[in-house]
Image (cartoon, rainbow, N blue to C red):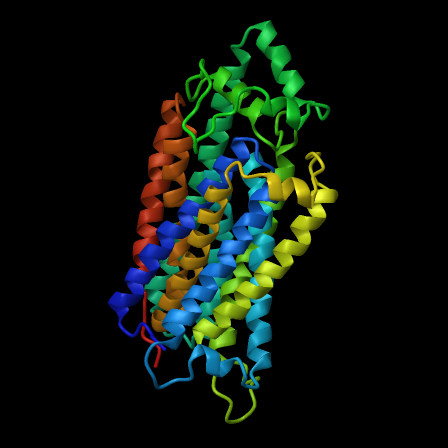
Length: 404
């Protein structure tokens, strides 16, 4: 099998992983804002996410010789390590599933900031000790501190931007205020919002009079169009989902670390440790199975007042399916590259990919018009948040060690 052995190679893996893992949430958010049901999107995403793991296992996992390859390990007695890998897949699936709802309530940028910070504070600390402290603590933990500062700045950005949006909505005429109340009610149907003229990015058609990003009319148009209605909802719902997702994310990397390095000596004497490609395969299988079970259940028993759907409706829903497939591939390859870099340089250093809000914020501004026409205070906080994240990813990468 192929292994990344140099520090430079590990950093390249982390950088590609950072881009992929910061991009797929933007695609999922795009589809939700276009009115596609999140259950449909996540089912499509899950298929190609597993496909990415299979491709990695059958290519990198079969190249070269030396350690057991992917297919050889499928028949070995390594079930304790497989269970750790599958546990990691379960918590990742729960985290990803939660964030697709949190994005609607809290916003793409802030959701990623909070979940990433929790992942770094808990997950990076666990990985540091599991990896027998191969990373440089004097560099690693200042990087963790930079993440914490960025979290505080991110929370301030969210608070400032929310205040800006409230000010915009207060400036509406009484007619538009009535519209706001209508879209905020639970009786507002998803079918009606889809009839407002949703933009279809795949065929290039768009509504004739599109509101400018950052305006009050844009906020109302977005609420009319999206599948998860957020007007009139408590922000505590979104924040609770976000913190739960962050806790789940903080555990998947340490679980994968235990699966590939057997720090707790659960394998029988003479049984080789699970190679990262075999571990990633089982990790992705459990992620896929749980995602299918939960999302098929949500088709018939939806949450957050989403409309009821069915397997037949899902199979017939091709609006945005290609984008959902792309999101699954990006997430799958992003996770694989993170683990490849972590196996070489230490999983604590590989947690540098949790600076993915850098990428997500970029897409949020470019695609969704987040922070358009915001106040000067919001822009200053946003720039400082991004600067701190750049510092954090650089410091964590500089802490990379080398696994013996």
